[in-house]
Length: 206
Image 1 (cartoon, rainbow, N blue to C red):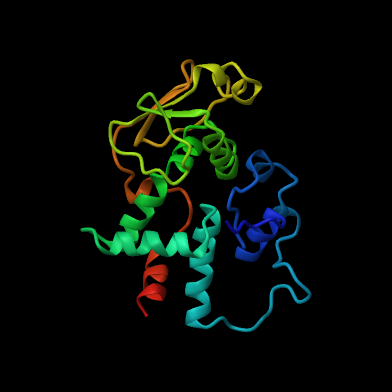
Image 2: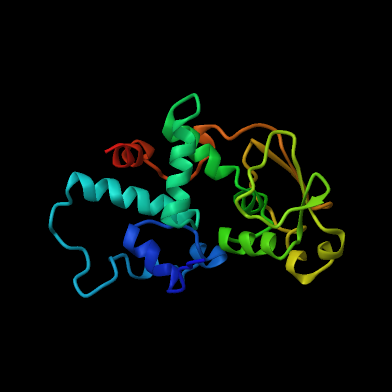
């Protein structure tokens, strides 16, 4: 499977906003956006006015990179959302938020979505008591997400019990037991990234 292997901070600089791809580094003085707020490349911050297509493309790339998806995967979420009731953009964002790797990130089990994805891949996570190692697994209302008993005592989760993580209102988390629960589907205002999803829908609708 294809995988992006270059510097994550270049992606944030290219999109001109923090995508929180590096965990704690993104909130420290080492953040690339704070140190070099210019686009990467030989001619940063070109004065050329972007076209309508360019604006739509950048919005799509921003969201795709924030959630760590490839183009085929991301378009699949759009097509899935287009078949469901409701506003396509909001449904698509809800589907992205309810990916298992993103839920683990929202619960604070991983400092970034990339780390949360790795935690799921390495079989540390249980959903309703059963091991799930598929990052794209869609959680449902009522699902209980927990850390394996053997993994809970590892250094990987040592700091989670003491960390103060702000969990979105559609989730609940017991840090002492490393157990979370999906209490509702995420609403549009529960998503903290600045996203103009209508631009993505316009791009894919062409």
